[in-house]
Amino acid sequence: MARVITLGLAAAGALSLAGCNFIRDDINRTLGHSPEDQSRRADIAASQVTTIGVNAYLWRAALETLSFAPLAQSDSNGGVIATEWYANPQNPGERVKVTAVILDRDLRADALRVTAARQTLTNGQWVDAPVTAATVQRLEDIILTRARDLRRAAIAG
Image (cartoon, rainbow, N blue to C red):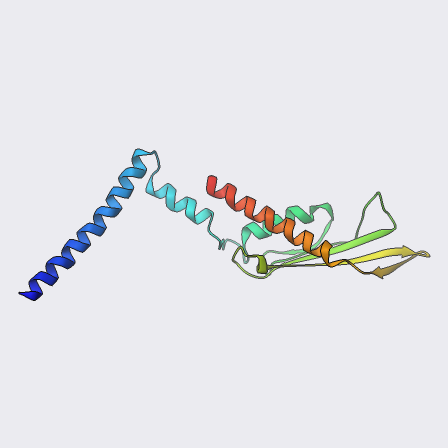
């Protein structure tokens, strides 16, 4: 007798779960959204985007942010973007080189590392000069903010 009751409760639970999916799909159709649209939108905005070797939002944001300088290297599988030396036309006695490395497929703050090198022109020679940590941190913040904006735009759709 207990076995029949247990089987009955299991069957009722399975039917209830199936009904939940049916109701959710019906509500989405009523609102003009198909279940396929919902799953596609979730796939596009996932924190892991694996069409390339690294997170696509971080990759695109880093490329856009570093577009002020010519690229020396870009490897989407390894997640490395390196620029050539760039001299601001308003300050030709100083030049910078930036490298961004995306370390993970997840959109996280610790998945990005930016390094920069700076040189100043002294007596006709380029001499290494220190880069402030705030400059590198600001570049990382700009890239991360842009990546989050790209993800939000993908969710909104």
